[in-house]
Image (cartoon, rainbow, N blue to C red; front, top):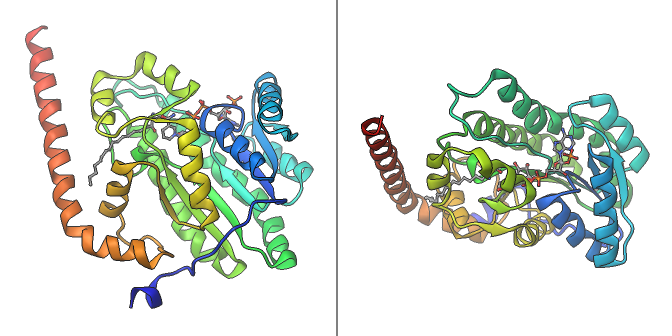
Length: 308
Ligand SMILES: NC(=O)C1=CN([C@@H]2O[C@H](COP(=O)(O)OP(=O)(O)OC[C@H]3O[C@@H](n4cnc5c(N)ncnc54)[C@H](OP(=O)(O)O)[C@@H]3O)[C@@H](O)[C@H]2O)C=CC1
Ligand SMILES: CCCCCCCCCCCCCCCC(=O)[C@@H](N)CO
């Protein structure tokens, strides 16, 4: 029954010789993904703001793969700049919206400027990219009869709210609504939407974040094991090539995906089966995690009050 029910239909999205366009391709997870895609023979374009870091990334990818990537300097908050970068790059087969910024802070302490900055880049930047890339992507799938992909980098903090992440989690949860609705709108064009949910991943961005993130954010985030950017990139690329809507990256991520499966599109009958069977159990496991997190917060607050 599940093999009949699961939608959208499963797809294989080839990478060789196809145009792979990724934002935030100059650092961390994005750089690892751009490198992996180049290694698989895709024509890769990377977009970010800092020109020097883009050139460093281009050199690093050439060294690792022998492939030359196209570089595009733009801020994803600037819709016109994004549109002209995509014009210059040419029609895209695999669009990866990976750019992202994060500063963990209690909402009461965080400036509204910083809240808006995260929402503008993480959420609005993704809108700008998809709006700019979609028309040519549709024309291209019609022309080539090959399926295409729009992949969006979320976070495990886009599946569950975490102390210190009110703004960041909101920006990432919002991407799920965007992705689910978009999948309905592009299914008839053979475009497959993917959401990637990494845990804490060793990147320059995480090193910066850790300098000032609240202790409780770190304690709760540590419930999920950390990963290396290359391993996240491999999980992401495998998921994108299989047209998976939800792409978890580690074991905790697989549990989160079952616990949050709700009404998400699902093209794999096998994973649908695991979701149907696992739903009740994972709800129980989730309650255990929340019990643990709330206890930790309570103890931490009690301790920190005593010490003044
Ligand atoms: N590292 C982690 O622990 C996790 C990260 N993620 C997500 O993965 C993605 C990548 O994270 P990570 O590799 O750690 O990040 P990094 O900070 O290492 O790299 C971020 C990349 O995005 C680019 N970027 C940032 N802002 C903009 C902008 N306004 N316009 C264009 N490009 C921009 C940066 O280039 P430049 O600054 O030059 O513009 C850089 O290339 C993010 O979406 C993040 O939320 C999800 C879960 C865990
Ligand atoms: C069913 C039970 C599931 C149990 C597993 C729960 C584990 C959840 C941990 C949440 C971790 C959030 C990390 C965010 C990383 C990130 O995005 C920042 N580093 C910024 O980039």
